[in-house]
Image 1 (cartoon, rainbow, N blue to C red):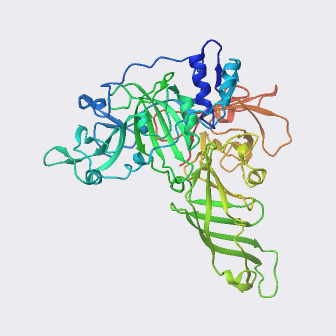
Image 2: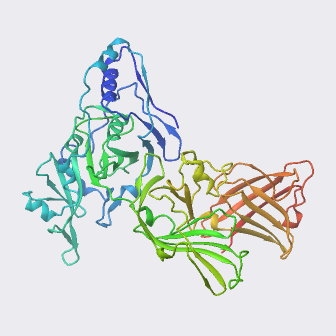
Image 3: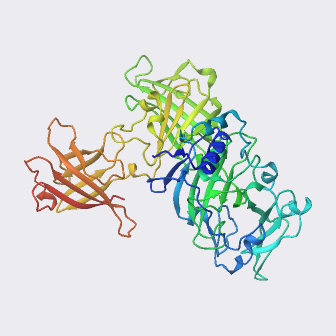
Length: 567
């Protein structure tokens, strides 16, 4: 991922001095630009580009939207109105460039003593955080607005009504209700808040001056965790910009601020100004526990022990620990010994960290059933039960949740030791795989979503012979060739596949010291059917070619077929 380098060129003092002053006002300097596909991009900070064309219908909070009802569709990031002509930009707007403001921008000073003198001066008080007056609108109704002295709202379009803010130089939009009898919208006292709209400086404390977008994001990074991307607006006047805008999601780092979504009329390459037309909306917190698997296990994979927990969407969980040792018997318990613990507990609401796809949570409570019996034992049904603590919750307080895409280099060795993911294949947490790590106890619970690729298998059949493919994140995916229904695998390959790689992979035989290896490629087949399919191609890499004729191949040492998911 390429870093942006701020270059202050001699002879370009208007641009250079501006960047220098702005960067001194922001303690967290970063500007990392990544496209939605993962390719790197950049702002050109050595230039000071002209602003683009004015947004459709121009002007302030009210004039911005004049004539908007001529458009056939409306776009908004947090729109709950359900209008047929309304499109949600979080879903429909195509992402172009993603900006992550957590990386550190390198700085290079080539302007000599002129810029050095700036360091001794007090920097301006840069943009800080969203004004409390703006946040106060987030959970209001139109009735609340009127009671606070607000004026009459005017119909905007598709059930939206715009009114002037009472304490901000901006407008506030509320969502009206559709009436099936009158075939029209009406604005009632219980109409809900949708957004604020107006000049950017109306919404923030501190000072906003003309600046590059990445510098603005850096300043926000002092108070918020910031993610941003440029989005296309499909040419409708209902977007904050007529063709392209900057979509920013802000997660507050403390309780004094609020989470928000900010959309700015700023195309890629343009600067941000105090007058840049903007939409400010409440950002609903993501309930991470509703998106991750419910079932997690803490186990070594060896021996008959495990701690299993089932997590509800509110963070509460039930758990069971057992360790079966059937070899330890005695008088009255010929069936062996079983160490057990049943418990319940609750995690706090997960919060994003400054690392992508990594969240933090705390253990709020842990309640062990039969806590007074810990360390005691009794015989039940010829088995010795030993009551134990909840293994996996030693010194439990802070937990980290690693979701798919998290950089595994950010994990401790202790955390990695409890995972079953091959570090030779994966550098990031695989799709569908999750880790809940007990920082104090250095113990990790892992879970896999039911619908993930790692819980599926694929097959191909030819005249009684078959090929079975089972994706795996552990030691490599299994590709097995069978010559008959009840026969053992004639050829069993371990394929170092990460679930997405379409390049050729060198694959060796499983459970064999044979040095023979094969070149394997795996490509998903998209034919419009509901069944997942992969085209698998195998080629012998050595001079001695494996005979694939039993599986329909007419080429020596080569096999290629489409494998379908086993339902």
